[in-house]
Image (cartoon, rainbow, N blue to C red; front, side, top):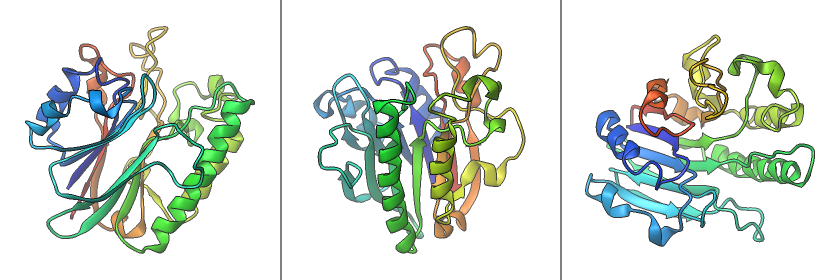
Length: 260
């Protein structure tokens, strides 16, 4: 089972690039972030024609998450629990029925949090507290489960080409990194770092200041796996080359393969 996560930065802008990547990469399941579309306007037929089941949790012009799956989905839920007042579309989850086992997949678009400090940063940290509560429930279930998406967190300095410029940014502030570590400390495996060590691995390059040409990137898209899912993992990679293509997102896909 190949499961990918991809912040597409607008489905309208990626209306050709996303299908092209799907045809090439052939993921079984895709967790999308920043679709920037209400549910009714998402071009589901484009993906249904490729054999994908389409589930969206959209929002006009901002945010929005979706699941594309060639495998059966059950128990689709939308919205991160813990705050009935939160109207931002940042969370979707479902159970994917694999050939060997079921996997609970959670797609997330974690708040950016800038400027920090400030109300947006407070919202980010509060959202991460709610995320930790949901993560603890997933862990307690003792079943294969994962949380994947754009976390807007640079976990360590090695995950940025120039870590010094991110020191006071909401993506790398000590409070942000501590909240991310709290998730890992529940017992989750950070899939990419479980397979790949060292410098120079990024999933985002800003459109500004020639960041891509200078490889001035950061790694902020992550897969967190429960122990039961981690035991099934055979591979985890970042499709870096996608960033060099025509009309790219500022993010690239990251994916895992599970023996499921």
